[in-house]
Image 1 (cartoon, helix red, strand yellow):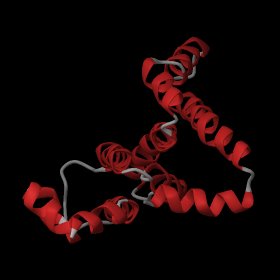
Image 2: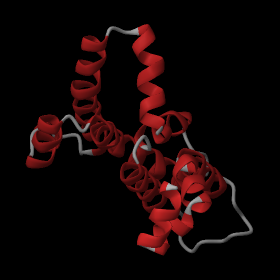
Image 3: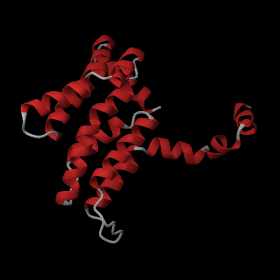
Length: 172
């Protein structure tokens, strides 16, 4: 699991209690700042967006069960949306997306949300496969970020589709 590897490395650098607080509170701050950047210039719009982004049933439940990988993806989504929009406008993906997309992909479901966010916000319409430019960067970051899940799925596709017999074979 990529999340286990990240924790193992960071646990040697940061005390566990500090790491836990950063993993649970940091994404909410990241989401708040990302929503400020995505909303309009009015203070009321920003306050409403930040309030709803930081404190809602989804975040409360994730905090309660300690689902930190999903919270990190949640905090990265506004930033990835902004990066996708910028890539669509300029044809270049911001470097921050190359950092946030792998962090948001520490769990498979969160990686899927991060990938869809980048692609929906960043792909130019109509899609032209011949002229990749920023589109190729989007695909590159999505594939690289989700590589652990894609490789595991491709190597063990029989377990995912074979039902009980494949699980019994894998257990032997």
